[in-house]
Amino acid sequence: MLKLEFTDADLRQITVAAAPDAVLETALSVRRLRTGPGAGSRSSPGLRRLRHVVNGSLAARAGVLLEVVPPDGFLPDFLLQPEARDFATGVELVGQVPANLLAADLSELPASPRPSRWLRELASGDAAARRTLAADLHNYFGSSLAPVWPLVQAGVTADRSLRAETLLRGGIDALLATISPGWHWRPPLLHIPSRYGCRIPLCGRGLLLVPSYFTPTALLTWRPDQPTVLVYPLCQDDRTGFADALGPLLGRTRAAVLAALRDPATTTALAERVGVSLASASQHATVLRNAGLVATTRSGGAVLHALTPLGAALLRGDAAAG
Image 1 (tube, rainbow, N blue to C red):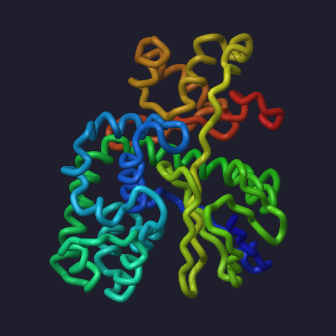
Image 2: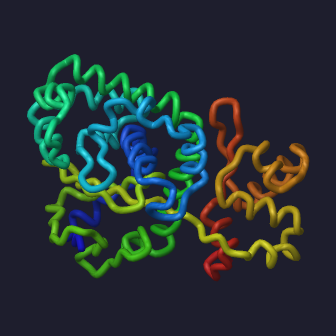
Image 3: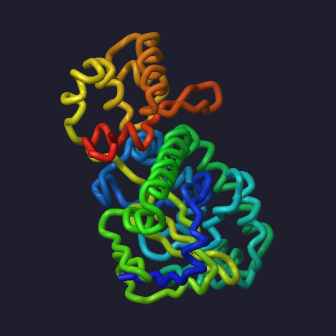
């Protein structure tokens, strides 16, 4: 069990990342592909689609990422770049990590009897080895993760909205008490299930919460003179049958549209899920958006719909939805 110890100063400095950490999600998606379809928590639509895209070609697509992303356990801290505004910036920041920190991170990976020449050169800070890592990050993201990235972005956006709503309704105590199932907030300690047992004081520097689409468990990174980073699995709605009960309230088709958006979808995908025309799907999504149950964002040329916290609560049947 990990126990994060908060001071009053830490509680005043809790923030939630504004966007997914693209480099981290890249690494974590590689990890999830390595563990096989039956491992970890319930498979998300993004992970299922990613498996379909990769389809057994992970080694060719990921390249040297397989050497720095083990199937479980420690993940090098240099793959965590929560301040990067986009994937390209994150990769640039990885390339700027000091050689001594690279070496320290890589020394924590599971020992290999015959580490590759590339890994040894990366640990020494070699420029060519850094370029290879950057190239393989770009290659994997472009060939594999890019097709599902809108789902990752929509999931993190919805989760961030949920955290904001929780904070407004119940304050810091409610926010910390509801981060993830099985976590417990007993002031001044946040108890997080883990194979490791330690108490970690935050020392007045605060906490940066980073929702992740691909991690099934918590990841913690301590940074000198900066807020500690806590990566947590983003909220996944339960697959329950409340849509049927919503039929008399919303109309059966509109209730089906709301239920279909448990996973974010474009208008085209939404129409296919519900079995209605594109125009009908768009019209129902607009009505639900105007009611505050659905949020709509643009991703490139596509329009992406996702449940708001109120919409998710209504599907779950929470009393708080009213």
